[in-house]
Amino acid sequence: MSSHASYEVLTVATVPTYIRSRPALARLVDTATLSVREVGDGNLNLVFVCRDAKGRGLCLKQALPYVRIVGESWPLTPARSAAEARSLDAALSACPELVPGFHGFDPKRFVIAMENLSEWTVWRAALNAGEIHRGVAGTMGEYVARMCFATSLFGLQPEAAHLRAAEAVNPELCRITEDVVFTEPYLEHEHNSYASGIASEVERLQRDERLVAEVGALKYRFMTDGQALIHGDLHTGSIMVRREEADRGSAKVIDGEFCFYGPVGFDLGALAGNYLLAYARGLALRRPAGFLSWVEGLPRETWDAFCAALRALWPSRAERFLSDGFLESWLEGVWHDAVGYAGCKAIRRIIGLAKVSDIQTLPPEEHRWAAAVVLRTASRWIAERNAIGTPDGLLAIARETAMDLER
Ligand code: ADP
Ligand code: SR1
Ligand code: MG
Image 1 (cartoon, rainbow, N blue to C red):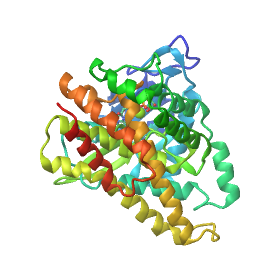
Image 2 (cartoon, helix red, strand yellow):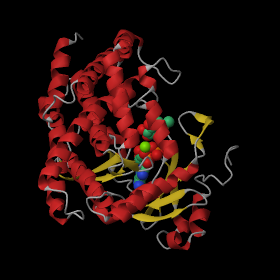
Image 3 (cartoon, rainbow, N blue to C red):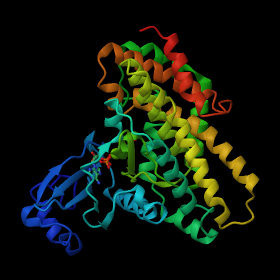
Image 4 (cartoon, helix red, strand yellow):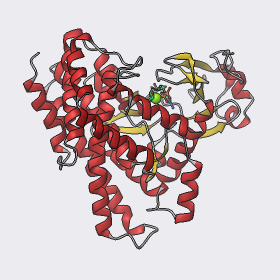
C-alpha cells in the first residue's frame, strides 16, 4: 500500500482477488486462469489488462493518490476517477462505439472496469511508427461533435444541462491543465525542461509579451466558457486505433479523467496540436511523402467531420430559439479557439511537464530541429489564430517553418 493511500492499491497479484470481490466483473472472466499485466504508460494512473484462458479480457484502471510521473510528493485526489467514469458514461449515450465498453466504477477503490483493448494500439505509437490509419481523424471530429451535442444546451433541456455542468466540476484536474498547459511553459519553472539546443527559441517565446497575453486570454476562456462536457486531454495518446482493412482504422477514446464543462475548441485543439507533433517527427525523420501528406490532411479531416456531425444533429436541438445562423457563427468561434489551443497544447509538450514520445525518442539533432519547428509553428497559430481561416493552413505553416529552419 502506498504511504499516501487510504485505500488498497492494486497489484498484478491482487487483481484476481479484487475481480472476485465484484460479482459483475467476476462473471466476465475466469479469475482462476487470469493473466494480468500492468501497462500504464500514462502520467497518472495504474492500468491492468487481464485475459483468461478462454481469451476473455478485462481492463482495470485505478487512480493513484498522487501524480505518477512525479511521485508521492505531488498528491492528487484519486476521486478524479469519478470524472473518467462520468466521461465514459456520457459517451455510452452519445457515441458508444467510440469508447471502450464500460463495466462499472468502484468509488471506494477508485477503479474503472472497462473493455480490454490490448489488441489495439495507442495512436501516438502508430503515428510514431509512420503508420497510416485513414479515417481516425474524422472519427475524432465526430466524437467531439457527438459529445458536445449530447452534453450541452444543444442536446439537453436547460435545467438538465445546468445540473450536469454543476456535477461535472473537476477543479483539481483543471488546475493541472491551467498550470502545465497555460502557465508554466511561459515562465521559468522547475517543471520545465528542454534540449539545450532550443534554449534561445524558448527564451524568445517566453519574452514575447503579445504571445503570452494571447495564451492568458485562451487560459481565461478555458476557465470560464463551459460549453459542453469536453474530454479535456484528447491527445493522440488518449486514442486507441485498430487497423480494419488496408490502411483504414477504427478508433476509441480513452482516459477522460480531465473532463469538465469547457470550451469545445480545447479538444479539437488538442488533436491538432498533436498532429503537429506527429508531423514534426515525420519531417525530422524524412518519412515518405505519402505519410506526410496524410498527416497534413488530418486537421481538415477532424474539422470537417466535427462540423458535419454537428450540422447533422442540429435539426434535433433542444433549444429551437438557436438559429442555423447561430450554429455557423458558433462554429467559427470554435475554430479560432481550436487553433489557439492547438498551439498551447503543442508548446507545453516541448517546454513543460509531461513530454511526448513523438519528439523525445528522436535522435538529438532531429529532436532539436523538430522541437524548434513545433515552437515556431505553434506560436504563429496562437498569435494568428483569428486570421487562420481554414484547417489546410495549419500544417502548411509547419511546412514553411521547416523550410526556413536549418537542419
Ligand atoms: P493515464 O490516465 O495514466 O494517462 P491512460 O488512460 O492514458 O492512463 O492509460 C495508460 C495506458 O494504458 C494507455 O496508453 C494504454 O496503453 C493502456 N490502456 C488504457 N486503457 C486501456 C484499455 N481499455 N485496454 C487496454 N489498454 C489500455
Ligand atoms: C501532471 S499531469 C501531466 C499531464 O498528464 C495528463 O495526461 C495530462 O495531459 C496532463 O497535463
Ligand atoms: Mg493519459
